[in-house]
Length: 171
Image 1 (cartoon, rainbow, N blue to C red):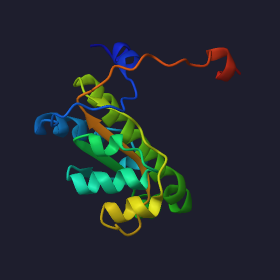
Image 2: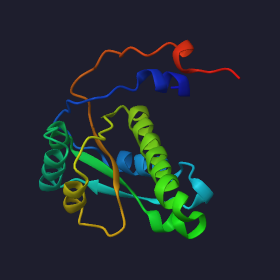
Image 3: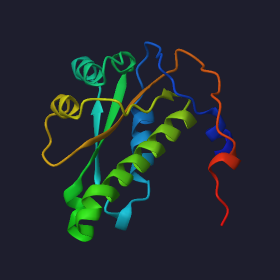
Image 4: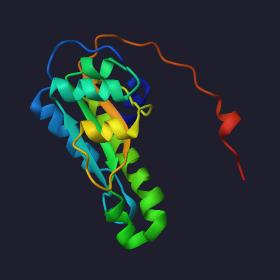
């Protein structure tokens, strides 16, 4: 499918079939995330692959009871790695660029999942400390997004979007 078709097909899937994500597909998703652009090509992020049910349950609890995280066979947790960015860019790198790097990598992973016929949903509502504990308390890292991935158990309808005229400003 071409890129624009991929964009049109992407949906926020919150119901997952009880099927595992094949290792080959998961590797393709992680490779797509790795290919994402980053500030200074420092790739100032870390990705935690949560396959164990107890970890996904802890993540669902940390995400204010969003149980579809538990349902998905895998959830990726994208975290900042501020030290990688601050070494070159100082405070702006550790505060902003590392968050941008993690979000771009997550977006690439989400689109790769769609291209592979899988569903996902970006989760940004969670308690940082609980996510941090669920993934092993990595020092100096801040969780940015949780991306549950699996075979879709639903086909959500497209959601409305603002008209370009409301947010595009021609200068």
